[in-house]
Length: 298
Length: 323
Image (cartoon, rainbow over all chains, first blue to last red; front, side):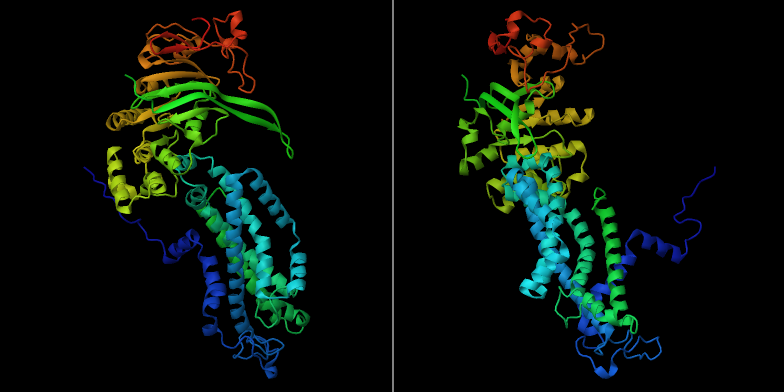
């Protein structure tokens, strides 16, 4: 009688490279790697990995091209700007600025929006109407105009940028959370919690909030990219962070009039913004697909 | 001797406004979901509310659970008016009245562990010591047929029947006197139903808890209830002890309801009684007896005078002009 022995392995082992590629497909390795290189490592370790002081330049070395161009030196891999500051160092410190601005803005905006959205969806009625009209108002504000007005009134600073961003960001969280709350509060476990005697605050914090966290994480990830773009745009227009700060948007603005003679001054920060935002969007898409398939529209 | 009933509802009414208009909404009518019903449940007994979808069963349950405010009428639990409670007495009420809902897939928060779900009534109301909560949860899980170590799992790791056991455990943990069972088995597989029904009946015997059973399935009702009230369009049509009602259904609506249920054996010859038409809208219920447009025994009087509840036997009340 023939016996069939179960083989533990397929008759050939897939090449290592193929196996590695499968891992790459399963996890968002590329966006995560890109983010680590472009944003997280530079931001956390800026003073350690940056070769030079981002604010201190030497006019003798101004406008040096990148290393592979004629006239470039190995001392300044990506060249220098018109004040002789090392572009690579400024990019690295700029990552820190971008990350700080976007995390603070998203955190503050997210908390405000989530709180208001929970109240709006849970209590309904007049509270809902009031908060949702505020959301509509916030979403209809012209970004740039608001930023310019605020900067004109208070002056450019880290705080002003954060305020502008929070005013623009909270509404999306409020809307998302309200929508989810509306559907969750009809479910029986909310009725059970009320029968058990849980207070409104407890129901919102213990029952509804944990069920919207997934969506919030997705939205927050997708918004980091948006915030970095926005912050760069504000800085470019002079309505963002004040001048010597090594912000990516400011660096592009500085290189604008030199674009023909010294393209590298604005090109590298531009590339950094593009790749970071791209990576964040890819990561956000991946998270959305894996955490919550319902959220195709965010 | 009759003890003071654990639950007493008197002239309970709930009318929901129907509004029109986007910015300035105006009330154009009222949905009379529950329209003046009275009943009581003695200690350790089960009253079943049966009727078609939309007859006001679930609204009644919500009124008793204080999830809705009644338009008029009162609910007394343990002699106290439920809708006038506040402070510590309200907390006390929240421990003595609990509920089990229909769908075990939506009645357990997917983000809480079984331990937290089951302990919630204790944690919210009594502030008992953590160690005591732990042992109480373990004990009650044992009572409903789950293992104490399953307390660390999340609801999605259980089957429908097990989830309903978790819901029962959570309802039972605070030593309640009354549990509202809103269609407790109708979302379960038929093979699981008997288990849960047996569990509920056993627990009732053990703890002396009263049940208000909301059901549309007559076999469930017959198995679990001591007394049955038949509802139609927000009114109680007939109320009797279970055996009496099943032996001698008197209201034409009750007869029709029983005739629509499948018999235990296909060869049983039964009186067929098929109702024509749809259930009328509760926004504008028929005048007189609500059942008269569909009643096979309708008389001229039925459209004009609303029938009062009449006792036709001991513990058997009917609201019909035939009696």
